[in-house]
Length: 457
Image (cartoon, rainbow, N blue to C red; front, top):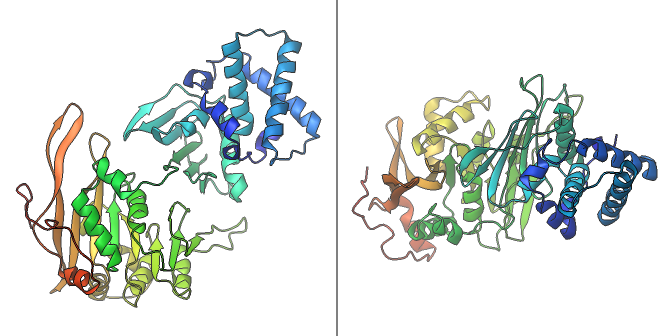
């Protein structure tokens, strides 16, 4: 069937993108356009299949759009269906989205204010807007309709989702992250999650403007990257770790060779000398998997100045520590955790997952030697993302790793649905501050000045 074929890359055609962006939420609802909408769509598809003899040239998007519009007009005339101009335009846009794009989800993907789309079965669709989740009126025709959309997303990049492989991570052509989980693992029907990223990557100025960073912290992180400080960016799900990693990575000098390793490619680095590598899942026979750990080991043979791991979640943490301890200073990665201290505990656990029979003391010594700084983010009650703590790893004291907080966010209130607070310095200078002087890096005055509301500890 036509619906099971890979989707056209509608993002390459500006006219179609503008048309699809005009679809209203009500027109995407199954019963909101007209009771005949699916009948019309199926009739158009049958004519399209007959015209192309089941073989479609997916690269000719403008021609395909014109053919669909022609068949659409023919079906309305044959069925003697009359619509107002506005309803007719919306109906055509809906059919274009369903055949060439991602169906009812298309308006959400075109809306820049929406950062996440969550589909819980064919009749429950939620979105995240400005950090807050809301339910929509959008529904799919049935589970088969939703499965066709999922197949359209994963097929063009060589991924599959079926009963033998009911979970898949993928990405759309524009870089949006996608996760799909289908029955029997998903009990209430296929579940689809799409994480959207800004088409124009955020800059440090953007994060300062929206309150994620302060200008002092931005200057400090810039200096840390230039001084080749090993940095971990931590936080919970959806706190903005990848966004901050993109921003911090922009501080890397353009003359350095960067190797990036990701589970699903998301980083949007601006430098020219970059080697990008991505995890490869096993094939149908369960063979051919290339893990993040193998990619990290391989990266060490590629003469990198910097190694950036999108997210460490397993045994690759050991190899990342080894890289940081063997001349690859300035490496960056992200880790899921609840606090800077928990970040180090998670790394301990992940190193043990590598299968190496190392004593805990040796692991902690490796961590204390390799990692210099942990930047922790949190998603606040009002949906905003903020850096809430920046902690230095100072070394070992007995059997424990010593950490020192350099910046702390203190919430002072909650008014009119907004969190009130500030991120300020604790007044303490990091032990690695001498690297700034060695590398002739100037820090703005007052970055480490003790401020009234900050409590050093």
